[in-house]
Each structure stands twice: as structure tokens, then as C-alpha cells.
Length: 420
Image (cartoon, rainbow, N blue to C red; front, side, top):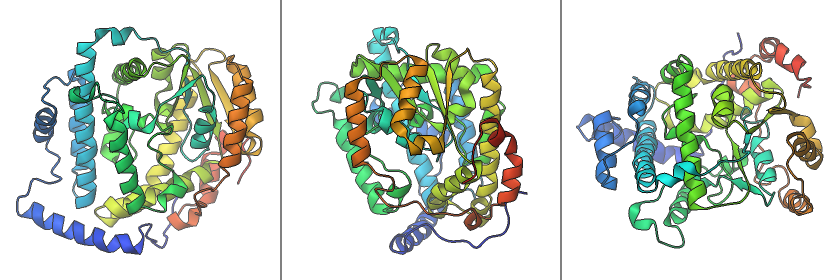
């Protein structure tokens, strides 16, 4: 066993929890009266996206089965409260709108699919291992083309916005960031969201509806059972989105991308991007699991339906981490020599500039004086815990640390990871 009984502590601020309770109660009442809110109907969502954009073509129909599976998992009894269902509906709606807009631009400009994506760097490590820190540090390289948050959320333009300057997508995501900071002021200490800064490419994968989501057990089980062809098709769509973004905002350099979800699909990533460089950061799994549980705690308190779904999350995190590491190890057996570079978290934190110099030397990227100067300045202005310290312990979530240490002993020994 890797979890044990624990005392529940809310991660939602008291001034937020009251209005949240009221909204959930009112929303549930409206739904009971027949209001079409948070119902996650496939047909309604598809039609709504088409009405909103005036477009009809979603591209390859391969997205429909994963969409349907995701909707069923999100609608499972007790999985989400009203706010959770509403947030799921909004995310899925945005992905469907994105699909329509992406396909529209690809049809209007077929030359986009000829845009090269040369020598991208992928940070494909587990969450809470220093990936955001490394991502933003590597983004100081003038030759790095980091995916910005507003691009990740809205990769394609509305037809009416194509010639507008500045791009209206930036203002939209700025408003979203202000809302997030209002509703979750403590979330910045866990993961800061900068609308115009580097962010995860998980949002691009969301537009394919094929990704190993942790919060929906039935959907995750479906994903883990998929043949390689399904995962490869999703990564080809993911690549097309990068080509679209490169075409929209040309840049003479290499892409810099990161998401823990790539850990589950390294085979597909390495094949779809044959000249890519993959970076894996290794940290004590006990710390990774506890920190991930803490990060998810706020969302669980805000969106979970029945308490049993919320309380089962730590067990799911342990299983999710174990599966990601297992799949990554299997993929390494087929990866070409030199395709993957390993970093230990403690060494990255202790001397980040030395670590990125070794990384660049391994893959053959040019570590310039301009990069060094910018990275040094960035480190000086972004000390650890700048937005507050992320404090947590495994016992908060009922995690059995000795059992976790035993379960992941193979991993710690293989990568010489010191306990934290």
C-alpha cells in the first residue's frame, strides 16, 4: 500500500470556498431544472463550436472516439461537481474550436505542412521535477523558440483576427491569467502562469483528445490501452500545430517544448520528430508524488464530486507516475544513441548553468555568450520560491513513504537519486 488514512485539508482559500459552494448549489439546481449547463453532450458541443466559428470541418475524424471516451469519463456519476463539469465543458469546447480554426488555416495555406521543425528540444520529465525552471532557463537562449502560453491555448487565429496587430489572442489570455490569479492566489507558488512566457505544450495535445490525463481514470485506462498508431496520429497533429505556429511567427532557431505527458509517448515523439533532443530530469519519486498531490489538491477541492473521487487521487498519482516511468524506460530501449539526456534534480538546482552547458555539449547546440549572459541575469531575477514556497508533506495526502521508496527503488538506484 502507498497511501493511508489522512486528515482532509482544503486547498481553497476561505474567501473562495463560500462562493464556490453557492455556485455549485445553484448550478446543480439549474441543471436539475433542465438548464443545458455542464452536460457534456457530444453533439451539442460539436454544433456549438461550429456555430461559434462559422466553420464545419474538424479535420481527421480520428478525434471523435477519444472525444467521446473523454466525455463519458468526465460525466461519470460523482466524478465532478457543477464547477468541475463546467470547467471540463469549457476546456473541451476550446479544443473543438481550436480544431476548427487549425484545420481552416491548414486548408487555406497548405504550405504550412512544409514548414520544417528542426532539432526541437523536449523536456519530457515528470511534473514537479524542475521542468518549469529548466524550461524558462533554456528559453533565455536567443536561438530557442519557446512555446508561449497564449500560443499554446490558442494556436490558430480566428479568420477576422488574421491581419490584426497586436494579435487579439494575447489580450484574451491576459484576461484569463488575471482570473486565475483572482480565484487561486496561492497557485502561483506552485505553478506561475505568464500569458506571454514559456508554457507547457500539453494544451496542443489537448486539441487531439489523445493524452494521458490523470484526473479521469476511465479515460486514462482507455489511453493506456491504445495501439501505437493512435498515439502516433496524435503526435502528427501536434507537429502540425507547431508548423502552424512557426508559419505564423517565423523564428530562425530550435523549438523548446515541455510536458510530463511526453513521458508516456516517447516512442511516438522520437519518430515524429526524428532529430529531436529529449531531456529527462530525475528526482526522488516520493517528493514528486507528494508535490503533484499538492498541486492537484486545489483543483480537487474546487471540482471533485463525491469525496471518494477526491480521496482516491493520491493512489492514482502513484500509479500514474509508475506507468510514466515504466513507459519511458521501455522507449529508451529503442531510442538512438544520444537522443536522451539525463539530469538529476539536485544537480540542476545546485549549479544550473553548468548543467545546461553539459546539456548543450551533449546535443551539439551552441552555448553562446549571449545565452550565458541572459541565463545569468534570469537566475538573478528569479530566485527559488519567488512567488512563495510550495510547502507540503506526503502525510497530508496519506502517502506511505516507506512503501513508495520500496516501489521505486529500481528507479532511484538506476539514476543514482538521493532521497529528499
